[in-house]
Length: 222
Image 1 (cartoon, rainbow, N blue to C red):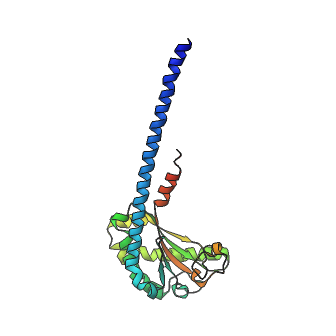
Image 2 (cartoon, rainbow, N blue to C red):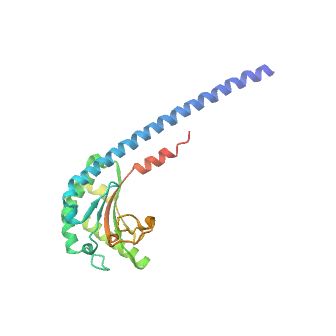
Image 3 (cartoon, rainbow, N blue to C red):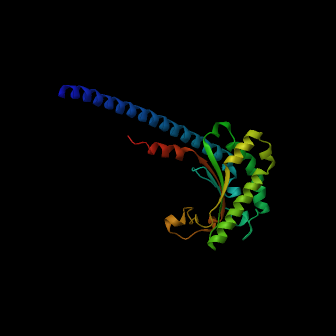
């Protein structure tokens, strides 16, 4: 009887070992695929950043904008974007948007970027004030800029598929003063330095799927 039990358990142990090895190979293969995908997305991010720099670097000073490697474009003309306490863009900002929007849409609607861009977010930011009021004001400003974008003639010159896709990924956020900047352009909540006037700004931010892919990669437990 003892020999029969041993002849049963030895093959069972071997089977479990084989299954564990198979599982390990599957996990490693999946992790390799995700790592490859992260690399592809990072390559796309680098190309988008290159496109943004090539298109807007020459007008950065004129428009008082900043192009960041996190794929955000920051309009920093605090007094030229909106009148104090108002949510409607000034004539000056509208003139800039009329030149900016066609070029920006041409970049974010490129076929080679469609699968990598998950969100294009228009952000409104203020410097100080009543928390609720600044949240509402910054959201109103972000909304009005987005409304102007989707009503712009260059938007309707895109094909219907591109328009529909952009309507899915274009969003807005009003942050109030929660992401106020110091004089060096860093977040005041991190540096603990006094906020600067450039906190009053509008940002266009491209969000890719790299963060989601990296999260999936981190969840793999070997």
